[in-house]
Amino acid sequence: MTHSSLQSLPKVLAGPIVRKVDAKSVTFWLVTSKAYDFEVLLRNGLNQELLFDNKVQPEYLSQVPVGKHAFVNLLTIEFSSPVKCGTSISYDINLCSEGEPSFSITSLMPDLVYPKQSLPNFVVKLDLRKVLHGSCRKPHHDSGDGLLVVDAQLEDAKLQQECGPDILILSGDQVYTDDVAGPMLVAIKQTIALLGLFNEELQGAAIDSSYKVFEHPHCYYQRPELLPDTPSSENTQKLFFGGKKKPIFTSVNANNHLISFAEVMAMYILTWSPEMWNQVDITDQDIPESFRSIFSAEKAIIENFVTGLPRVRRALANIPVYMIFDDHDITDDWNLTRGWEEAVYGNQFAKRIVGNALIGYWLCQGWGNDPKALNALYNKCEEHFSAGGIIEHDKLVEHVLDWERWHYHLDSSPKLLVLDTRTQRWRSESNMNKPSGLMDWEALCELQQELIGQKAVIMVSAAPIFGVKLIETIQRVFTFFGKALTVDAENWMAHKGTASVILNIFRNRKTPPNFVILSGDVHYSFVYDVTLRFKQNSPNITQITSSGIKNQFPDDLLLWFDRLNRVLYSKYSPLNWFTKRRNMLVKHRRPSNHKVRTLLNSSGIGMLKVDADCSKVEAHQLCASGELVTFEKKD
Image 1 (cartoon, rainbow, N blue to C red):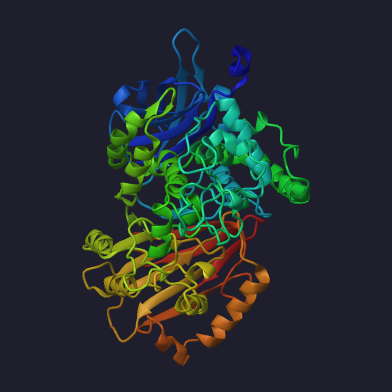
Image 2: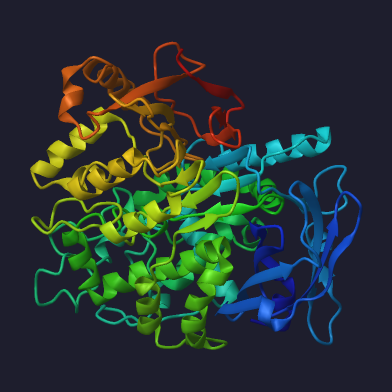
């Protein structure tokens, strides 16, 4: 790249995103095109007290090169003194490079600042009363973007000088590495070239480097031909192409499944920021003729998605954001069964693909949730990142796949617990094709210890703990016939051990009397109030599912599921006694825009309003269409 071309690159490629915030510190995430030093200004928004105004010292800056012109930065700033709950903090970040003038993010991106505000700002809230939450944001799904609703909520609160939402929780599928639109893949290719995102050597493949993927005739809309097949023959390790069987990577729309770490990093940059979209030219020049009509339709949706990215970036820069993965952040059906794991992790190339996506998750999502805990992983992996590329890529993948602390909690009121339901699975010993439990015995025991002594808890589980019984029954039937992968048979009740332990946790007299469970995953929204039958001092459990941010279930099919579920699993139906939740009473809250239906099908963002002990729980869906839907509790 020439000097003039380098000068035209944005200095900030993605971010800043406000990550973990407490009374003593704040963490910022951003990707820059140079290895900058940073100066940060933090000011109390109420009395203008200076909380920090200095260069960020090396021990508080973690900087990872992911390309010649791309650096992931995590900045943790400790306040000069602890701040009170409810304090608004304004900030600015200067990018500094020796021999060059410094630039502030607000001068580079003035649209980060809301009207009537002088700087971007966030509020330190340890008492959680209003929480925004959602999952499943697929750029090429033809609907509005729920993150634009987050931006609107923040803007209205600041204009009205009212209390806005406390935090934003993204509970899975923040990116779809396994389901990528053709125009997005074209943008990814150009972003990799512009930023010099690192090439990687590929072992056990017909081509020897990740850059050559884009030269292959099957690069666009035909990537299942490039993805590894179930390792059932001697040639699996040697072949880049899948054989006659279904590829390991089972997403129905895996036609553009990401492969390399460079592709994953480009995806994050393009999903959260408008900057690189201004640098790329989306044409169908390299698209096979038979796929150009699909490309054209996707391009119109992607172009609309991109127009909203400045507001998405602004929102994420003005509210603390917490995240956890689900399968599409890595690949569809990730760790669904023991058989799936044996097939993937026994195939060097397949393992690399999963590892690359998980490295991307760590750097772009997981790290900011709990920087101190994740610094141990950074210390293990730091030596693998160099200015010239990734060193010993397979060892880096091993380190990340072996990491077991993706779950985390906030010392808030109520306490917030975020579960890892993907990497601590309770595998079936009897049948390799049976779904694994979403959490194993050890992980569930650790969860119970976190719950003991709490008056109330907000628990984040990517998949609903209490789902739609009819759909779970259908999944159970398919599992019985060895077809768990066909129906994505992932739910808390699918594994006898996991189901028994999690339900016993709710029954334990030492665990909280009030639970709120926030979930996503399913592409529709619903709210259930759950209590124990035949028990006087039953805990009150509210299962709130908000999905998706930009994704929806096929509406006609969901309508039939909703009708059949209400009939077959009504309050007095004998079929309830054939479920694992037979000793629990589940009451539906109906969405206010419908008198009969219990399942809402609308892209948007969920809003939880709750008191200190979760005895009063309001659930709303702020639809991307502009409609406000309240889930109304039955008397």
